[in-house]
Image 1 (cartoon, one colour):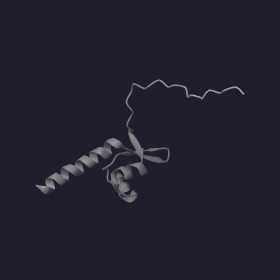
Image 2 (cartoon, one colour):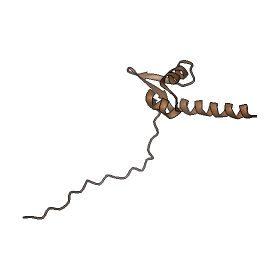
Image 3 (spheres, rainbow, N blue to C red):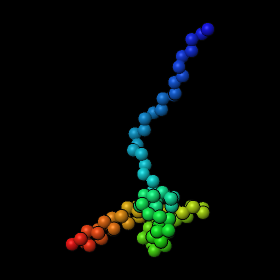
Image 4 (spheres, rainbow, N blue to C red):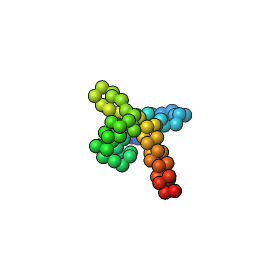
Length: 82
């Protein structure tokens, strides 16, 4: 019986680019990132505190607006403690 060699996967070229962070995320990921519920997320979008757009019928939340929202909340909590 002939001996078979173990199959190896073709080697991929290593990427020189860093992994990309998403520019926008689905609603579910946005409320999970913020640790809030869907209703609160919808309220923040409605009030303009988070920027979003529709991709077909799916709403996407801009990650930059999530980071800005958190920064505003942190800044506000620092002034509350003063």
